[in-house]
Amino acid sequence: MLVDFYHLAFLPIERVLPRVCERLIESGERLLVVAVPELLGQLDEQLWAYAPDAFLPHGRSDKPGAKDQLILLSDRVDPLNGAANVALADGVWRDEALAFARSFYFFDNGQLDAARGAWRALRSKAEAEARYWKQNEAGKWVQGP
Image (tube, rainbow, N blue to C red; front, side):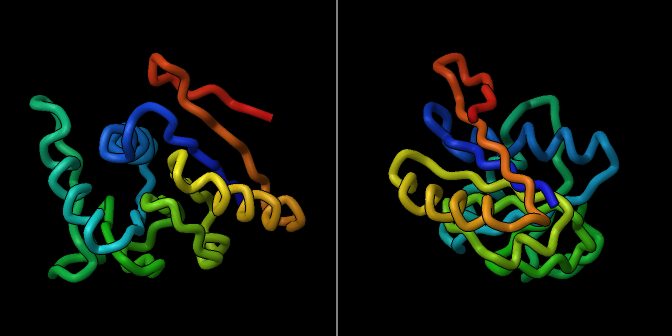
């Protein structure tokens, strides 16, 4: 399983997550987005309105039709939509993410210590391939060591 660590150094998750969602949908994949309830509301709004000419089909796990959503927002790591991909959008690592084919772990500068701890723990697991990405000032992702 692949775990991509995304260090949000310049842009917030609300600006980054829509592009990840677009790429997964384009490739025919589904995504479970996990965050604390307060952040889920912000992400829900942003996925509807992030671009005037775009639409990202998504829904909330606590609403009807959760199993049919290409992008499902939830406060639990429970892929009701059958997603093989999970985005941990609130900077909190959850070991349940290891059950997915690919995990996106987003964290900002205030969550560096927690991210370092998760990195060390994952590097010791043979079944997990961890990669680190950081934004440069232009918002482009650059892979680190």
